[in-house]
Length: 211
Image: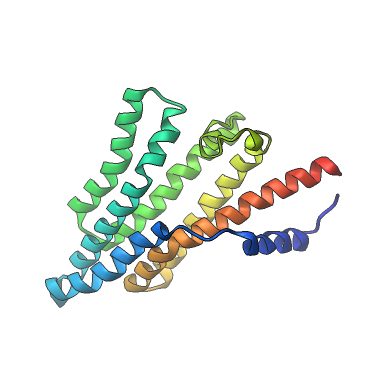
C-alpha cells in the first residue's frame, strides 16, 4: 500500500492520542532542576550563576541517572557478562557526573545531553551498518516485537540524532535559563515522541505485511 509523506505524518501525529498516562517519575529530575537552580542562584549570589547552573544540573542529572540505572543494567546483562556490565554501568553513570563536577561549566552541562544522543545513536547506527538488532532487542525483549526490531533499530538512529539536532539548536537559540526549562521537560517530550514512533513502526510493518 502506497503512502504519501502526508499520510505518514498524519499517522504519526494520530498516535499521540493513544498514549497511556506518563509515570510521575518522568517529572522528578525536572522538578529537582527547576527548584534547585533558583534556590542555588540566591544562595551562591549573582556573581556565581554559572556555578548554580552546574550544581543544579548535576543534582538533576544524578536523579535521572539513578532512576534509569536498574533498567540500564538489565539491558547490559542481555549482552555482556556480570563483570563487564558492572564496569560499564558504573562508567556510564559516574563518568558524566564526575566530568561535570570537575569542569563546573554550564556549556559542558548542555553538551553532555548531546554526548548522550551521539553515543546512543552511534550504537544503533553501528547495529544498522552491521545488520544487527541486539541493542533494539535489549530495549524491546518481548517476542511479539522481534519482527519489528530491524525497523526499530533504524528508528532509534533517527530519534537520537533528531534530538541531538534539537538540543544543539536550543543551545544556540536560547539563553541558558530557558535551556534548563527545555531540559526539565525533555524526558516527557522524548517519552511521548518515542512511543509515537514505536507505534508508527509497528503499524507500518503490519500494514506492509497485509498489503
